[in-house]
Image (tube, rainbow, N blue to C red; front, side, top):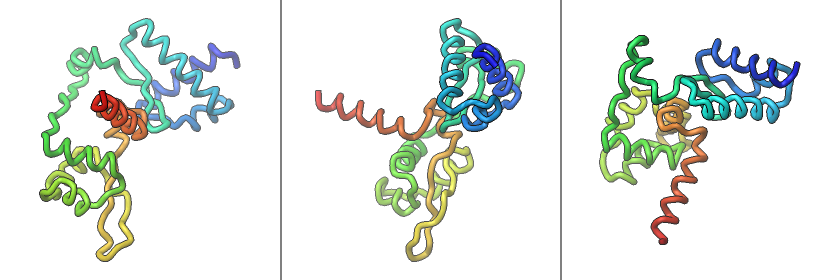
Length: 177
């Protein structure tokens, strides 16, 4: 199979899946190593960007998904009846950022940082699919630990939570200037 055929195969898989597909599954399906598969996916994604196509390939936690270009959301929502993204309140955003930067974290730890009850905020974030229970802390009472989800990454356009550190470094650099 040549590169063009591999690209077409990857496009077909991502289109048919309709959700994120792990890099390992893509590589296995076309019988190549992960680094080659990632290079092929990046090549396709770059072509879509250069040609200003209506679709994009996004990376989410070492998985890839084909989606519509954000600038065409208005048109896509007309035929797909997609509800507009709901606004996240300041308190939810504060709680979410605490979870994202400190995960896994308990409600009590969030409350210590924010200085107010986190019950409502955490429950709303779980309801929105941005936060999930990741386990229990090995401490008295076995409190629930929370972390972010793939939906969190998708919502904020991040490939992984490692990108959060990059944003933090940029902010620190700006403050030093």
